[in-house]
Amino acid sequence: MPSADRRLQPRRKPRQVRAELTRERILTAAAHVFAEHGYAAGTTNRIAERARISIGSLYQYFPNKDAVLAELLVRHIDRGTWTQADQLDLSAGTLEATVRALVRDAIDNHNDDPQLLRIMIEEAPVSQELLDTMVRHERNRVGQVRDLLARHPDVHVQDLDTAAELIVFTVETNTHKLMAYPRTGRVETFENELVDMVTRYLRGGR
Amino acid sequence: MPSADRRLQPRRKPRQVRAELTRERILTAAAHVFAEHGYAAGTTNRIAERARISIGSLYQYFPNKDAVLAELLVRHIDRGTWTQADQLDLSAGTLEATVRALVRDAIDNHNDDPQLLRIMIEEAPVSQELLDTMVRHERNRVGQVRDLLARHPDVHVQDLDTAAELIVFTVETNTHKLMAYPRTGRVETFENELVDMVTRYLRGGR
DNA sequence: CACTATTGTGAGCAATAGCTCAGCTCTTTG
DNA sequence: CAAAGAGCTGAGCTATTGCTCACAATAGTG
Image 1 (tube, chains in turn orange, purple, green, blue):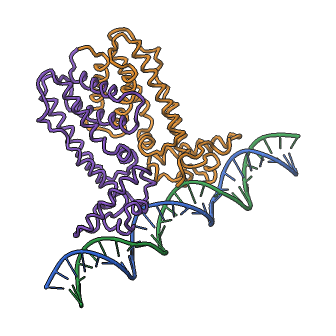
Image 2 (tube, chains in turn red, brown, blue, cyan):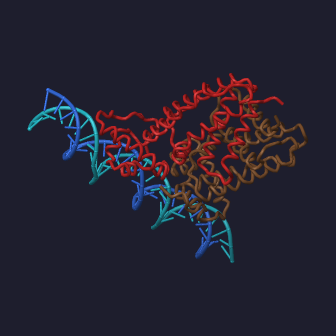
Image 3 (cartoon, chains in turn red, orange, yellow, brown):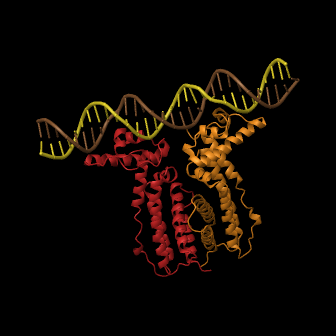
């Protein structure tokens, strides 16, 4: 088994359209295979088979198996455009709506392929390099949320930085669970309670 | 690679003390090896080597590699005795203390070996059988918490069942993150905010 | 002490998966 | 159109790992 901290860059950059297409075929196939079989059982040969390309082609664009999943993860992260903070209503009395927007955003990010996301989050071997990328990204989000909270008049917490961290992680994780493991109850109920929890927490007071 | 849903029971029950001791040696060694190398790289041969027994002995008590980690996980679950609900103060105005007790409980359960727990939670291949055990256990906890909330006079939420689920998962997950990935800030700060979030949520009102 | 049952041993088998490379096909270019 | 480079192929090499089994050692028993 290969060590996880090897280079994740492809060995050759595609120069023809044909090549770019092959790369996409590989990634699409990989997404399906990983989602269906899991990471360990999602072999490179299976991916190549599904993409209808030879195994050799796969290794022309990805130095190893980890790199394929890493690319998928990075793409997912980059896709999470995140609702612009500017668009949010920050006037007093709208805290709940703001929080709900955040939650909805998280849900949207999980809507594409919950199974694949589950694999990526729970089974992927995370290299140091990839971990750094993810940490950096999370820091960004936390920073955005912190600024958001700082500007909102209704927010009253002890430690703003910690609160931002707590909220981002809690919303993200609960949403993930909600989407990857469909519950018996109604989804809305869960969403409502989650929104309530965050809102009441931020509103503080007593 | 073996399928995860094979029998998890040992093939032979130990009848002599010597055998029971060997079994323990294996589990202790496995805990160290998994914590240090992760699940995939924690090979059975490495475990046997560390336990100073032969690989054959390992397979006399565990039908396959998964079973070893499964046993460790079950033991961890069973160890989480959970503060008796009776001992908690349920009089009005003590909600925060009650919540803090729950959080402290979660922290205690992660104190033994955060690294091993991280492996078990994030890397272990979970068989259907094991999953059932875990689900059953979580249902118990959720039930306990729901009863607790139902009895406390200060609790005001829309849906009690969902609230219990949400809280158990949120506290568990945040604690896990806190312990497995040591933060830069002070731990107490995070604990305080987490307690605040849950408390304010439950207290409701507006 | 002899006999049986239990426990322990470790070389090596079987299976699998990641990955290579020599040579082919297709595209571009002058 | 021909040469050169880019892209593609897939049989099979290499390495690893979970696991078996024939045998040895130890403990229990009358």
